[in-house]
Length: 119
Length: 108
Image 1 (cartoon, rainbow over the protein chains, first blue to last red):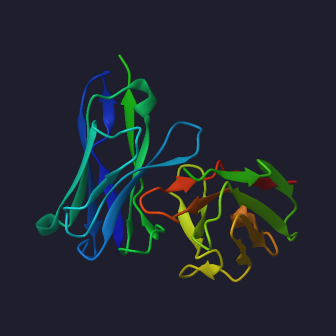
Image 2 (image 1 turned 30 degrees about the vertical axis):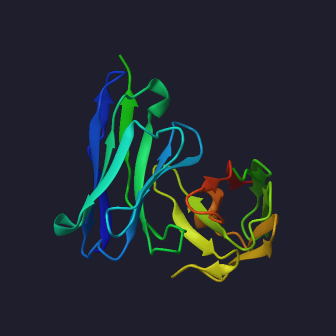
């Protein structure tokens, strides 16, 4: 089955860190850019970050710039989002999604992983 | 930043009726707009991109229209599976991606 599998979420204290993963199953992630979108409880969607197919071009929302780091490992067909210096307002389900470079809509989505920031 | 305003916030519709959802952009985004459907506990699903092109396997009862600042998603005859929250997303300038606040379509 072709799917994206997101993992790595959990409960973390303010100021803490996690590494979220987005693994491709049944297909290669390599032709696609990987984007991260989050959704706070009961709220709408917020674009967070993106990594291009080359793993070099990275992009961030202003709300996470300097705290989050996006990357990918082509050999593992997996994308990553390192979330650091976490705040209560970062509490959300984090979804990964893919898109072809230049086609900046998101056709395939993972099931999401919940990050809860609380003391 | 381009702000997307969706209306109404909630739309109550009977099965078989037509639903019309609106998305307004704070500045022109040409046709660089997508629509997504999200059901409780699920990830969003792409319905429409390029303002009017249906994504793979999306039924023909879903249609998108508009350009510039005014966009519409129409569901021609609501099925029970269509009750969900719908979001628009603009991608006019990369990476300045934004989503609308969503429209919940519920059963009348």
